[in-house]
Amino acid sequence: MRLQKVIPLDNTRSVVLNELNVRTGRQLLAQAKELENIDIKALLTDRFDEVVVLLGDCVVMPEGETIDDLSFSEIPDVIEGLMEVNESFLELMGLAIKPAPAIPSTDLTEPVSLSSSEGTQA
Image (cartoon, rainbow, N blue to C red; front, side, top):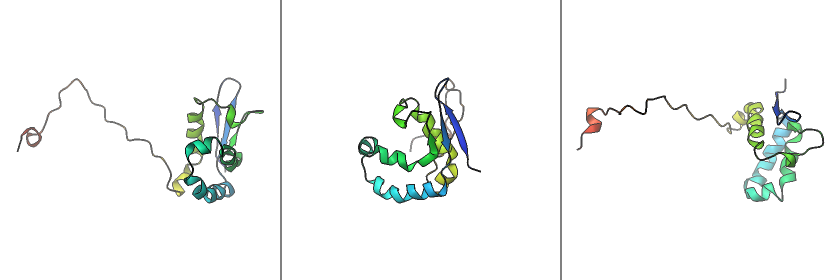
């Protein structure tokens, strides 16, 4: 079963994110070498249409809208959702981004005790 996630943009608009199928994944991999050495500015301007086409039906925008209609504040949610529904593909490619480990909770008002070896000078 193909994974899917709906990202609400506001009260009336949402983006539907679909898991990559094998065909789209293979197309992305075939293009990855070519896109690898291209400046990010070029990808977002001159080559943007090529990058969007590679996603196929993985990003379904609200009717009458394109990715260009997203606001910059909406993009992180869409990227996070794409990574979530494509976790298996990303893991297979060694590209999965693991969440940062949680920082242990400590009371910052308490002094830190040093062990005898840490507190002495050589």
